[in-house]
Image (cartoon, rainbow, N blue to C red; front, side, top):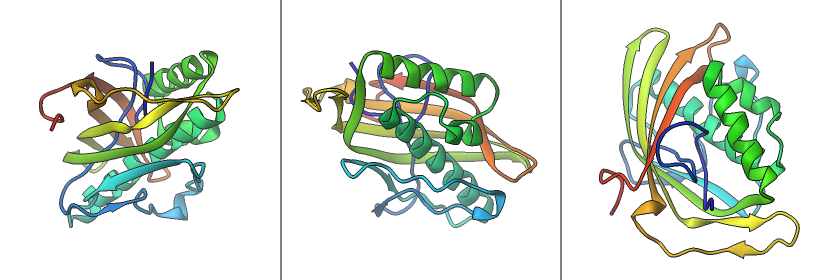
Length: 197
């Protein structure tokens, strides 16, 4: 059963999704991204929060990448709360097989009759900019305070916190013609030792 979210789709570990961080321990909503490229405004439901710890590095390019990664996470979780794999926000922040995987992920959760609630914490982001249009980001997600919620009854399914509550994500992003860093590949590994407390 899922407990939280923040990435999308493929990879090892199954069951949930995740987020990112580098730098200070300050927790905040998703960092703002430049709206010039037509980035959609994403507002999560009141009972769901994506918290990003130290999501800036001081480098402008790295910060731009992390901002779009954070927006992708929000877009994925928003689509899950709406139960809609065709949310246009997904196509804005994913491309190629990563988009197909994200849609499959959202659809599978909706089909099972669940949404998500609580707080997903994203931290320990490590970023490598390969060139002017491609980069890689590895980050952790803490799902210990995020839970599955029955879409019909509203019942929240709280689960015990274990190593499986923590997920390591690895994503490759590509800068498109509009200047948006889209995820082209995303994998996850639940219970990875680099993310567990």
